[in-house]
Amino acid sequence: MPILGIGIVAQGLAEFGVAFFNRRARGREWEMAIASTFNNHIILVGLGHLGSRVVKQLRELNQDVVVIEAAPREDLADAARALDAPVLQGDATHESILEQAGVRRARVIILCTQNDNLNLHIAVKARTLNPNVRVVTRIFDDDFARALEQQFGFRALSATGMAAPIFAATAAGMDISAPITIEGQSLSLARLNIAPQSKIAGLAVNQIEQKYDVSVVLLRHDGKSDLHPAGDQRLVANDVLAILAGAVQINRIAQDNR
Image (tube, rainbow, N blue to C red; front, side, top):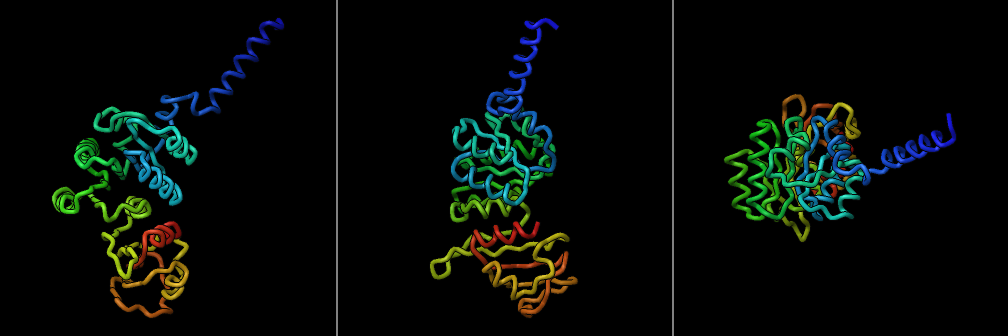
């Protein structure tokens, strides 16, 4: 092969290598391609400070996440991509961007924008495209949040429940109550089903309380509920555990119950 030809081939391979390994260079098409490979994943709309923290918490829970943001901040978008969460730029009220994020294959959509009406609009659009998708939405009005849960089955977290770990744990499938303040501490009641491969299976109730700094308020075993389980009672797969704890503690036990 002539030297000039070799040089052209080498340059072409070098440019291909740079494009392949540089996500920013690949741009929107690359983000869409990655999102298209996800299945049974979580879509997060709104990559502000709350949204970025929720992405981090979800990735710590080993959840696949696709992000949609109309005007992404470069630093927050880069942080999400560094966690292997593709970021799609666009308006989530448009069917096309939800389709690109794989809404028909998603199991949960989290709405973290600061506009209640926008969140509701996107939630309804997502449910139209995928009637089975679970909706977790940020709502600033407490009464509106309760109404959405009662009328539409949306899991609405009001301004009093804005902690990112609560959003993440809720999206991951835990049932969590709105937080209450006890002696200056914000605590929530959370219920989790003990997974077959859970790190907490086999631990005793008192070990759970000490290791995770939580209070066990109920244990359901073999269909029977015990509001005062013995400290030496050990958890097994398919048990149901109810705990009272802060957002950080709930997120930590959720991580170990994967």
